[in-house]
Image (cartoon, rainbow, N blue to C red; front, side):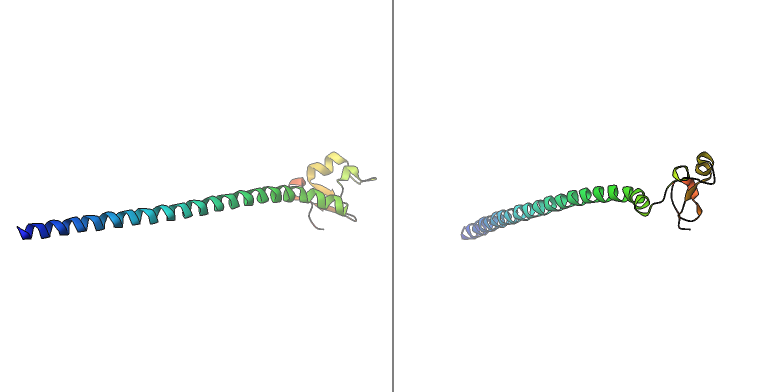
Length: 114
């Protein structure tokens, strides 16, 4: 009989140890999950800020060619006094006026250095 009681006590001790270990593991797991969730939330916020910056930069870059043309003083042929060609003809061929010469441009909507 003494033998059964010893085995029963060991089983109960093992079960108590298992329950304590599981409780400790679950507590550690939940704490780690909370830290990971907070980290991912912070990362998603940072990505949102980066997206906003990229949208602003995209708008700036899209406006840049027009701003450069205005700053440097390039004008389409139909806005230059005494142009050598009619506006419709020069626009159709893709030419723009450079300060001293005509500059052909692929597509007719951008300026190339002459």
